[in-house]
Image (cartoon, rainbow, N blue to C red; front, side):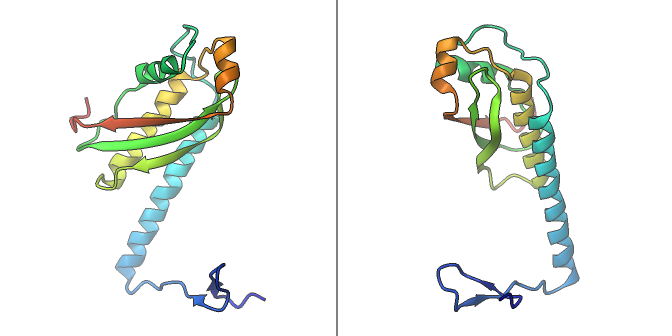
Amino acid sequence: MHDGILHRADSPLIPIRPRICPDGATARKLRIIMQLVRAIILVEIVVLLTGPAGAQTTKELNTVADIYAAIRACWKTAKISGPEALGVRLSFTRDGKILGKARVTHESKTATDENRLRFRVAVMNAFKRCTPLSFSPGLGDAVAGRPFNFRFISNSGSGA
């Protein structure tokens, strides 16, 4: 029976009531944050689902180190002010395409929302520029479906 109150899964007897915004300013801030989150999700979907923009690397990759080097070669840092870091986990298919959806595993908490969005777009563009990767048959068989973790860091803050 649904009574409009959320219950914890571990203890159905303790109700959790949603927080109510104390004033209009807080509600506006929440709406802006939700719009930003929706924009980030939309950008991720569009970038990852659009076809390959032509892989920048045509050299056949033979090792896992070659995969990281190829992605590093496609990386162009975003024009942001201040340091930023983003960790991404994803898998590849046997033929070098991204399998499923990439997952953000780490993101700087000190960056502004605008800088986070710009940095995420730069990371997604790096994968878009590089994929599909040219795996050798042996490497494709070895890495297909296995998760890879990538960490992108911008320490300069100059946007260069």
